[in-house]
Length: 280
Image (cartoon, rainbow, N blue to C red; front, side, top):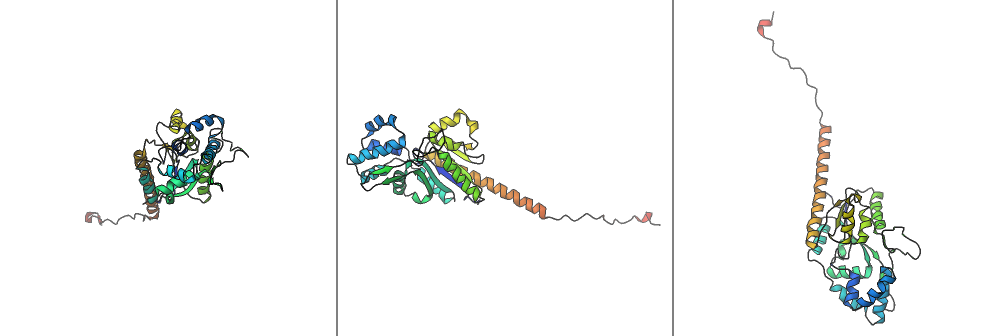
């Protein structure tokens, strides 16, 4: 079996691992949709979610109630097996999401899949002394800009992808990345993937729409998916495909070594018997 430790699978979270947007789910389930929609045009999404957590706290909603809502969040039944299979096959799994640590950690721990992810990159979400959930930007745009015009001010996922790529390069490790996402924020990192990588956009979602507008801009192989069942099938197919490619490379390398190792003895002329009638 080929070594799959060089396969890094990066998952978006909302509408990729889970089937909904976790921010909207909490706001809707706790009855604050109207206020959320009123405030949405007035501030960045990340700032709005911090404001909504203040509103929830001011109206007596507790952290435990938020956790209970998150525990009911919908997820396709084949997503968890896909994550477990990929991890069992030796792939490294990471999350890159514009949600927040509190929501993601609560959900993955409830689902029993936290141990399968080596890293969760998202906006900080911490409970303060008053029992209010505070949500901060991954990139503090009040101090400086991350400089990417495509992405929201609080997070450019490309910078995270580039950091992962650089860490493998620094250690001299080869890496193939598989990136799964659905939103417009997943388009920018898709442009940072290399030719040997794989991009898995959710079909008919914003990132798929952006990719299909000009497919040549994405160097990676693009494999779209529709739901958890398709995700599992396509993701495991990609892992198998990478394994087969590695096997072929190893076989080709071994054959080359064998060919180099063979020493061909020079052919000597055979002593043929001389016909008697020619002997004087």
